[in-house]
Image 1 (cartoon, rainbow, N blue to C red):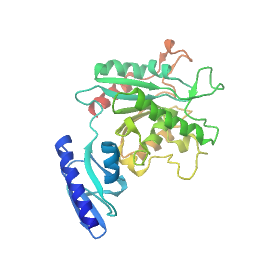
Image 2: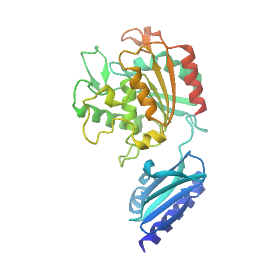
Image 3: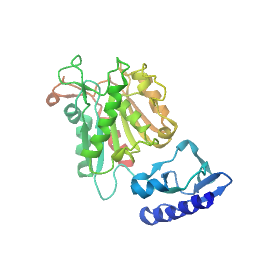
Image 4: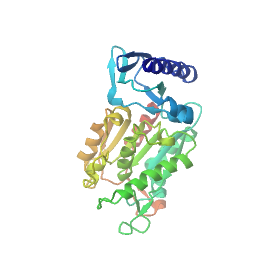
Length: 323
């Protein structure tokens, strides 16, 4: 009887998903103790599931992406297999492009260590990208919750790279999730992370296949990393068991990334940035002449000197429009 329940619920939800989101209808079968879900459409579709009991209580918010490691290509499509041990609902969703039709894109920007949100907002790369996209995108600049007087008077940090105190990192994760839910109207379409902010973004992506409720961040699948690296390179002492400090299998195969890497970066080594780029299966790398800093001008964002090559800024704009 358990097998029948799994199959019926899955088929019903696939039909509903097709009507509301125009998603393909997956083929679902149960053999022995396994349930197989397959679909023949492109890789843009992501399979999600929800326990029937959770769906009754939470509705749409009960759905979570399945573990991408268990999805494999077959013929002209994909197949997901798991143990059929309880009633489960399945659906396919398309996270869409960075610039969706019908509404402005929501872009979340995470600054680097020792910076603050206003500085990042005035950084020429972000400022010119905002101008280029116009009313097609809204930019939101989160500010790290931790201060460090040894950096500068107003400098902020997402965590202390000299400490193995995980509390700072965990507080920043909570802060960014709350910021996205309370300040951003709708789903986040793109995350831009500079230096330490990029490392935090990569860590957040590793939570996408967890049971944690990421709210507005749950559907983000596009990211730009600027002179950044995984946490294990920036803070190697963060080696606690279970801490996902490098891209996991799920995020590595689902996040579409652009990596900007300065050849003369002496703070985040180019090989660290390249290693992060290679960790993502859908990534594009742009290497340019320059050092770690996007602009010069101290702590005052009103007097910034642009250090970013124009060709790189145009390439970023093109990547956003094409993805």
